[in-house]
Image 1 (spheres, rainbow, N blue to C red):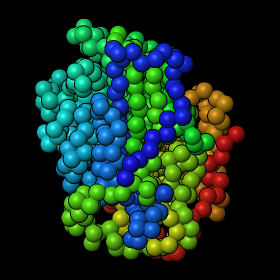
Image 2 (image 1 turned 180 degrees about the vertical axis):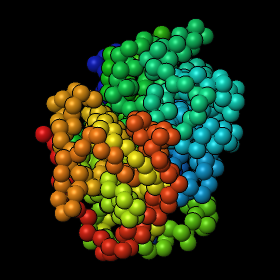
Image 3 (image 1 turned 45 degrees about the vertical axis):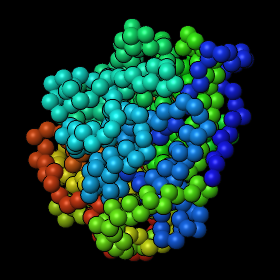
Length: 525
């Protein structure tokens, strides 16, 4: 089946005809795949039995096999690249770590990828094993990893590939705050993306390469800053912010591509729901004269490659017993979409925070704070399987309890609302307290206006000098997502409680059918 690309937009206001020396390149791209090898629902969680055959599901590697092969027939010169975050997000990663990702990326024929923050979730050792299994390079320019033996000599800042006799330079970019988002270890030090990219551009242009593409797992806003602050970058293939760019959808965050000067920026949402297809024309000096395209929806109209379906089913066999176990039911959809949970109170956040607090309340713990970045999907109404719970909470985090002052809690909430404009995962979902914040205030300068803590049958103002017992997950307790005020050995902390997914599943079972809700515990001026 041929997949028709929507080419209604000429992204550049340049109308010169294509001369004999012009070079055309198709850039196929994905980002933030998060181990969604099987088809997913519209909520980005597992596709229920029968729904895929009924045309209700999206994505999956088997559809990408078909779509990529088809797209390659439309172009004499094409590359396939990833904007990072292959790791984490389903039982495939929990069970196999990076092995299935490596196998499937090799099958699809990727030419390069950048390191996403989640590629560091299990430290440099797992990332190295993944890289050793790949048939293509992995890139990261904005970090000094020379002191990390697992990465030095293997991970590259940039690389050069050839298509149609032309050299194409590729540069990798990773979030500057990866040390807060994942576990890169003490030997990897991240740096400013603009300076790092420009340094590699200069290296590549010094080699005579005049077509340069940045593979960036840094988010749509940072990509625009990089484009504006560098010279010589032709295309930025993005990731991290799960941004949907389109010329035909009113749900898009911007046009595909988004032009900043002469640099074309693209991103294709996440989870394999779309295959990005950007067609770029370069003149003989390496300047972009035209950049057009549209993300292709990986919906039921894209046939699944049968061999890939069979292989993934084989790999899924050890997982089936775990994920098909029904643990509870939901009366309605439990909203866990990142676009909601990272900016406001959401039903999934309330569920997880309530479950955490319920588990340890008998220990005297009175407050729960959960990072919204740990919530990875919604759950639809009806039966809830353990696989769905693990899709929402895939990180194998454990409950962590600790002591902290009321002022420390206020500081934590201030951190939590400090990057709402960037839709960052540090936004706090809470239980045992309520708070009101003001978006008109500058970040970290008093956005949190009031905090009330549960007391008896009501709420009272938080006491900055009082010590409170708090529960979070071990990632946040150890400073993840900017919660540095939680870390340290002076908190009487215990970081090795039960798995958060198990705690949530048991809470759902005890309250089945679970009725999702929001109750105004987080307010905004």
